[in-house]
Length: 361
Image (cartoon, rainbow, N blue to C red; front, side, top):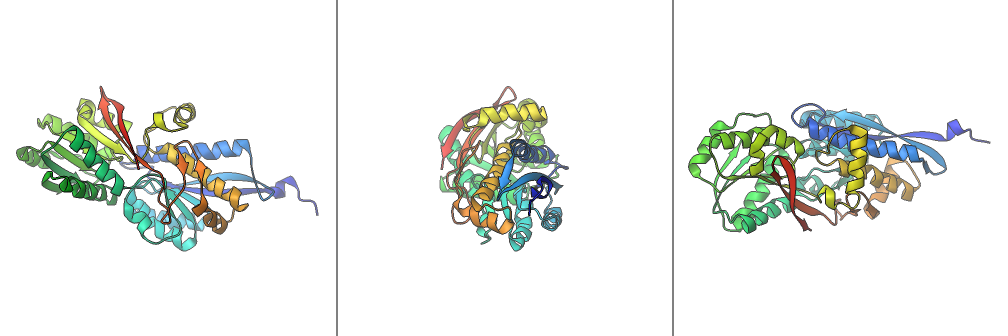
């Protein structure tokens, strides 16, 4: 029997879960944009798997960066019958959501950095970047080398990401012989940090490490300058965005931050991706859009090698992934962590993000 072209076409859903509202919305939309751009490109170039023309469709959901919402969203995506998940953005959403994907046998690819994500024993968990167990020590070693601090204060936003990164940094900096004079917790909705900063000012640290996102780090950095603190502000990939400069004003030049990956200008396809992204969305890249873009291509590569769009066969093909993307090579260890990662250090000069150094892992 002859199969008509209409019958031969198949729509395959790729799930994307990100904070599209709330304090992490800029980073969440950026991540979803990366996924969207890849899907549009693949559809435009044509995809055939098992003799069928495949049209990819984005199933994007808003988890608001909230663990409880993320858990509901994860079940909704499973019910929608997506074949893969790109997301969630923040570890506090990614980790609770991962259980539903594991139970459904759906591969999940994320830029979340909390080590706990891939330590759960799930066969579905894959990470596109380095972890906080690598990022925390890289931050500590960098500031030891460049600033030689004697005293450090640490503040975190009590999220899985912020607290986790701060824990890793604290362990590493103490091992290097630096005195941690205080450890304070706030929350990811806070915008007034003057009480904590006034206390820290009396402790006179050389560095204040902020574990959290740009929405908190912006006002934190601005208020630190207003209160006359001279300590450098240090943070991870959650604060290392273009948005931070808007939120912190001229105080942003006092920030040193890391990203769990290579800087855009050092990515194999970074320059070309930046041009495509700007043309499509008319705005600068905020964070991990290149990785979410690559994630879709990693999934499609698994489809091609499996010669199937079935979720089980895609998942079965993932451990042998070896894909060269915009951001570099994607191959994974037995837990689903990236085999060849890097950590990059940045500061801000006249309000513009400025690359300092890259550490290969």
